Amino acid sequence: KAVVLCTSRYNEEYYCDVLSYCLQKAGAGDSSLGATHIIEFAVYGDGSLGPLQGAQYSRLWIDDTRCRLQRAAISEESTKEIVGILYYAASDCGPDPKVSFAYGKSGYAKVEVPIQDVS
Image (tube, rainbow, N blue to C red; front, side, top):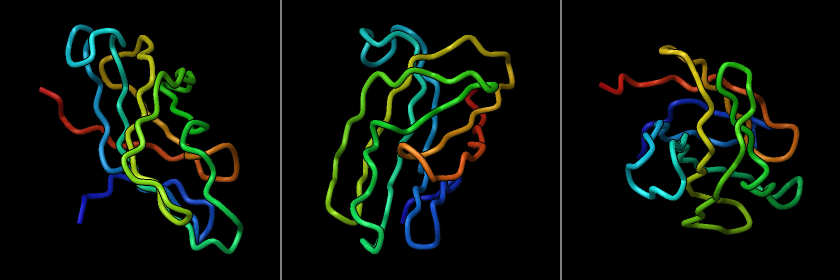
C-alpha cells in the first residue's frame, strides 16, 4: 500500500489521499510544461452521495497563491475510485514554501502537504 502524505476529506466516505508531491524544475521531464508542481493522488467514495467530483477541479496553493492546473493524467477511474497525477504551473516560492491542496470542486478540506527533502 502506498504511503499517504495527507488526506483531503469531504466526509468519512469521500476522501482524497495525496500519495506524493514534488516540484519538477524547468527542463526536466516534459519540458513543454516548464517548472511544475506534481501531485499524485487517489480519491475514494462509497457512492452514497453520487459520483466522485472530477480531479480537474482540484486546487493547489503555494504560500496561499493558487496555482493553475496544466494537466490531469488519470490512470484508474471508476464510480468509486480515481487515481492519477495532477500537474500545476509552478509559481515563484521561497526556500520553504507552504503547499496546500484541496480535491475536487467543493466540499473537500484544504490540507497542508508535507514536503520531503528534495536535495
